[in-house]
Amino acid sequence: MASKAFENEFLKNLELLSKEQQNRVITYVKALLKRAESNNQQALLQFAGSFKSKDVQEISSAIEAGCENIDKNEW
Image (tube, rainbow, N blue to C red; front, side, top):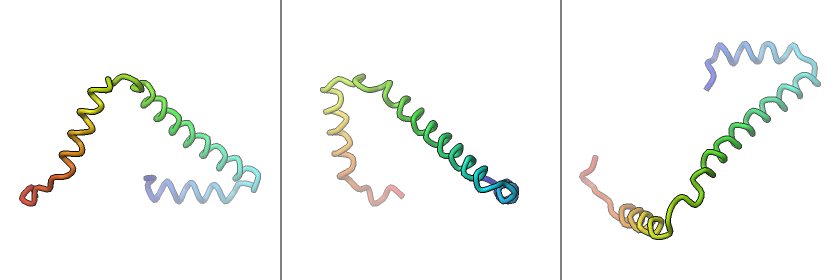
């Protein structure tokens, strides 16, 4: 999260821009966010198909078994 000082400075300068310029800023920010999201998806896609079916079944079973148990003394 941005610092309050950064946020105040950003908003102060944003108010000085025309509506068209403000829209360009919003478009740019959205493009940055979309690019970051796309990069995250690409990072995950590199692992697609890297697990064998047997391994996936074992992982799924371990998750299901572990999530079903509650250790009341853990905390």
